[in-house]
Length: 328
Image (cartoon, rainbow, N blue to C red; front, side, top):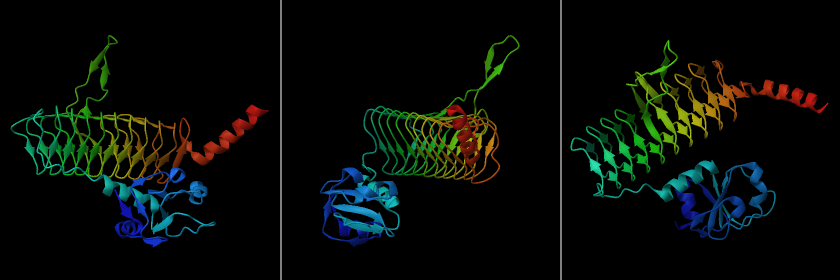
């Protein structure tokens, strides 16, 4: 990457305030910026670093009004956070290596690979699989028979996709995640033993979904576990059988969702959240970290906190009283 402030403004639909020929060749956090680097300012808590940054170029929102002199050249954009994400994607690109596959992989004759599909070492692609154009499959990936993967996907090393899964376009599966393993289904027998319930369903992942490293999404006993378009799931999460996650929901690390839970669209779950099985969570619900949701959430836009989770304002009032009593 080597770009001038003028180039950046053109690529991001922004305007330059300062030297349009200021050059950058790498990214840095605003507190660490050095000459030749690009930083961005989007969170007010970091404003002090705007005035001390040595970065050559700083992306800022259009409405930012500095209170002191600023050394870097400013590139003003509508949304600095979104702009830097777009720029990093442009710089990183998606490696469209024209090699169809390397020699050390196993691809069934009946599998259908689209244009410019890239397959790394020690990959197994089962019978009847379909892989869309420009998808890249890294080393040590297993794709079970009959699985369908869309266009422009990235499957990172060590991912295991079980037979019969359906994955949309522009999906990113990070290293070590597992799509379609058996869910945790067991029936208690009269003698106290457990009888395993076979899982014959699948997982359906929509378009533009990203699944973090070592996350597991279990297939359903029947029908499907469904991850709708635009969902973001962090590392080390557990999505159990028959769960439905609504579009554009974001789930932070170490969150667990029990079987048949249903999340509405646009929900945000903090780290280590637990969602009880067989409940429905209304769209645009936010759940704070370490909270446990044990019952249905019927009101859209609710923010929950605690274990069990309740309305965050009620929780904070209760906590204030608890803290007060503990100090007496």
